[in-house]
Length: 315
Image 1 (tube, helix red, strand yellow):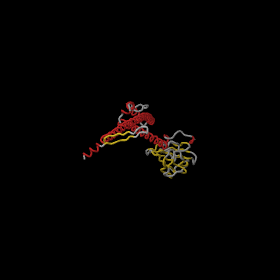
Image 2: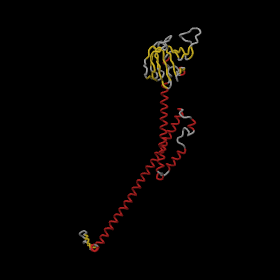
Image 3: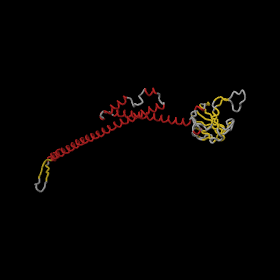
Image 4: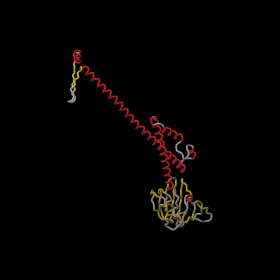
């Protein structure tokens, strides 16, 4: 085997090079061993050159990717700064609204920051220092921490504004439900409190406790719901005659008595200012008028404390 291999490597190999017609052909002769050596050498050089070339290309690709990434990180840093400025405005607005709506005690607000401020000075300084660094020197954990801080602050502001929206909506509902309108037009003939009974004016009469106000006018004068709510009763009641009771929520209800006719039914939702009955003289009454009561927390209260100054409707 070795002898055959030695004979093969010792054989001569001739290479004939034929240039253009102007030149004579060239004949090159070498041993098979030298030809194989040259072939292996060429193959090795080619592989090594390819390896070096590949590493060089990868280096430039990686460098280009790094440049793109640094540009994106710089843009992200600017966006974070702008986001923080927006959050600053949102926080300031949040606290001003809370002061206006009395949702937070003043000492609680001052214990954190002035109303015109945003985040604390240390927060702003920390963010400024973070954004002033070279993007390549910032660790991924630092980016996550800053972004999570912005996200958490955004959640707090969103929750706060949702609370403010709920509060305003609740106050609007309370305002609509509060019986502050005059229930009808006419003259007030009897106020809340003790009075002589109009049905019994005999000597020695100690009077009675009047739980509402009486407003007199012509029969069939319109009677209005003084606030939004739900009709709890509409019909006849001994002494009150035709009457309507409206539950306004928040522990407040109103009663409209001595009507000639009711226009709503039990369970019906009514809105503030809606016509619910006509003035009459049903029940224990000496003439056409409306007996109007307001109950709060299960007890009758003076309606005059709720009624506004008379509007054109009552004139």
